[in-house]
Image 1 (cartoon, rainbow, N blue to C red):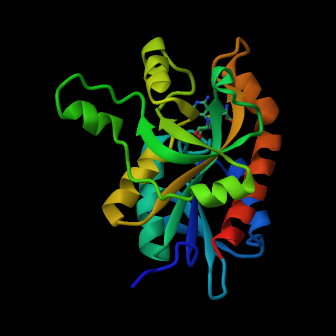
Image 2: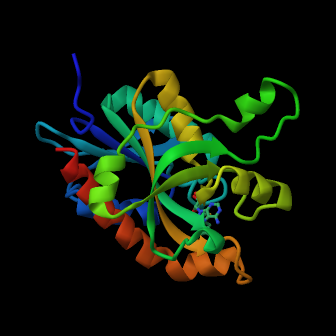
Length: 239
Ligand code: SAH
């Protein structure tokens, strides 16, 4: 039996500032958020109706008081949210760094056709491929073309900046969206056999002189607005 991808869509989002516009665009603002696990701050908001949509966030780290970004919280959130919501499609949605030299632009939305890690570099045969990951990605290219989205590689690492060796890796994979969660979410989805895709809005350009953090702060609002609009369009296109 084929289950339609759009039947139960779960968005996995790292930061509350990214999640809030997505919940609004999906009509989930009235729904109550529940904690996914008593020992972790991950939260989920689930809509109703025959084709429910859900938004899970990593929550706020209790010790540091900031959004629990990066790969470890993303794994806990994705696993617990999949077990509670049983999605037919998981979308890792959020902000990302783009690349001027590959035509990237602030506010552009990228849909992944490949998802890898760039900082799990292990120079041992077998472990090198394990490190990179290259997780299964659902083919939504027809919809992406209809919606005018950019299609390309999303690459994940646990740092906002990147040393040259990571940048070289991202050149090799022709990365269009550099983030800190997508590949971690994809790894869980592969194990749970749930179709996965990453949807990333560009908040900063990695290869321009201005510090990434400053670009990120200035552009987060416009990028998350575009991300939320696209999330709703993609959801509608999936039926
Ligand atoms: N200074 C920010 C921290 C955000 S970290 C703040 O406190 O608001 C960046 C987040 O956006 C991560 O969740 C990551 O997935 C994404 N991101 C945006 N631009 C990125 C880049 N250039 N490299 C890596 N991740 C990036």
